[in-house]
Image (cartoon, rainbow, N blue to C red; front, side):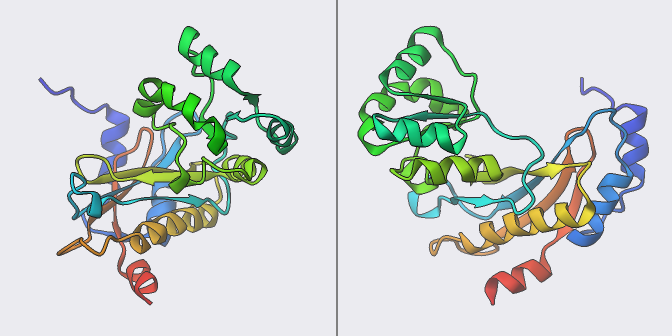
Amino acid sequence: MARKPGKHYQAAAKQVEQHPYPIEQAVPLLQKIKYAKFDETVEVHLRLGVDPKHADQMVRGTVVMPNGLGKSKKVLVIAGGDKQKEAEEAGADFVGGDDMVNKIQSEGWTGFDAVIATPDMMRSVGKLGKVLGPRGLMPNPKTGTVTMDVARAVKEVKAGKVEFRVDKTGIIHAPVGKTSFASEKLVENASVLISAVLKAKPAAAKGKYVKSATLCSTMSPGISLDLTELSAKAAG
C-alpha cells in the first residue's frame, strides 16, 4: 500500500498548478512552497526520448555550475609523482597512487564525492570498477576525470562541476544548487544544465527529444517546466 503524502507536502502540492512553468517562474515558486527545516538540494529531472541501450543514443556530459552547488565535493586524485603535488596544491582532499587503490579495495573506503585519475594510473584504477562504477564515480576521459591536467580538473569539480548521464529509463537527474540560493542564481544554474543536455542531443535520437522536464527539491513536489525558450536558444 502506497504511503500517503504528509500534510506539508500536500499543502505545497496544492500551490503548484498543473501546467508547465517557465524556469524563471518555477524557481521562485519552488522556494515559496519549501517546508523542510534543512537547506534542500534543488534538482532538474529530464525525461528524454532516447533509448540508452543503444550506444549512439547515450546522452552524457559535464557542465560547471556558474554559481556552484552550495557544497564543495570531496575530491580524490589518483596519480603519481609530480601530479600528486599538483593535485594537493589545487585543493584535492585526498591524493595518492596505488596506496589509495589498495585502501578502497581492502577497506571499502568511499569517503569522497569525485575521483580524478591520470591516464597512467587507469590500469590500477580499473580494478575499482565494482566499487566506483555503481556510484557513478569511475574516472572517464569523456567527463574530464581522466586527465594529466589534474589541477584544472580538481578546480572544476570544486567549483560545482556536474556530470549528467541518462539512466536506463531515459531520465537525467542532476543537482543545480540549494533552496537557499538567490532565485536568479538557481535559474542560471538550471538553465546552463538544461542547455547542455539539449546541445548533447544524439544525431540518432528520433522524435521528441525532451519529453518532460521537472524542477524539485529534496522534499518538494515536482514543478513541470516549459523549455520552449531554452530549446529555441539551444537550437540557435
